[in-house]
Image (cartoon, rainbow, N blue to C red; front, top):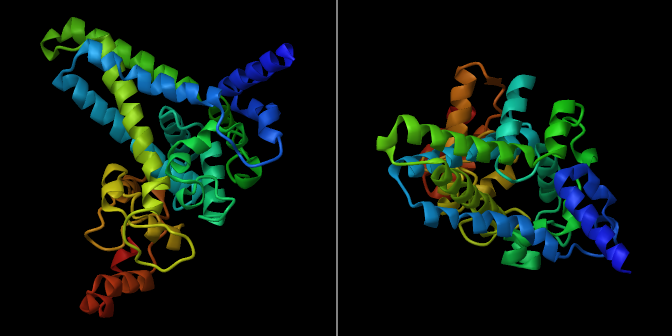
Length: 331
C-alpha cells in the first residue's frame, strides 16, 4: 500500500516535468468530478512563498520597473496569443511569431499554450454549466480562481480540441515541458541583476532582488490577474449582451489584464480580435495587436461586427452613435 502511494506521488511529480505524462496519472482518469489535491498546491506555495525573497532583498526603482515590464510582456503573450490566437484564432501569424510568443507565454507559469487553449475552448462550450472547468457560479470563487488547477483531472491536455496547433512539434515540445521557460526567466533575472550590480551600481539592484521582484512578485500578480477573468468576470460587472452564461464586463479586470475584462463582449463574439466594443472600453491587447499588424507581424485581425457596435451603442445609451455606425470598428 505504501509503495502504491509512493508510486502515485512519483507520477504526480513526473507530470510536473512532462505535462503529457499527466494522462498516465491514475487520479486524472479516475471517475468522478475533479477534486483539489494537496500536492497540486505545491507550485502555488512555491510561487507565493518566493515573494518573500523581495522582503529580504529590499526594493529599488529598477526592480519595480523590471517587475512591471516582466508583467506586461508576459500578460500580452497570454492575452494576445494564448487567448486570442491559440484559443480563438482571431488573427493569423507566422510559425516563428507563434513560437516566440508561445515561449514567452509559457514563462508565465500558466502551463503550455496547447493545454491553455484546449481548456479555454472547452470553457466557452460549457460556460457556467455544470461541466465548466472553472465556473464560480457552479463551484464557487476559490475553485474558479485557483482550485481547478489543483486537480490532476484538469492537468491533461486534450489534444483533440487543438488539432489546428498540435501539428507543430515545437508547440507540443513547449507544451510538454512548460517548466523550462519559467526556470530560464528566473536565471535571466538573476544574471541581469548581477550584471547591473557590477556595471551600474547606481541602480541599486542585484540578482536576488530581480529574482524576487522580476520573477516571483511579477508572476504571482500575473497569475491572479489572469485568474480574475475566470472568477470576478463571471461574478461582478455589467452585462451588455443577454447571453446564456454569467459573463460580465468588469472595468478593473480589463485594466489589469489589458482588455480581457470585457468578458461579456468576448463571450458574445469570441472570435473577435477586439474585446472592448466602445471607445471607453480600453483594450490594450488589441492596440498592441493592431500595431503588430501595421508592422507586418500578424494579419487578418477578425473585426467586431458592425451590428455589434450598434447594439453596444444602444445599450450604452448613445442612440446617435448607434444610428451612425459605418464599420469604424472594422479595424
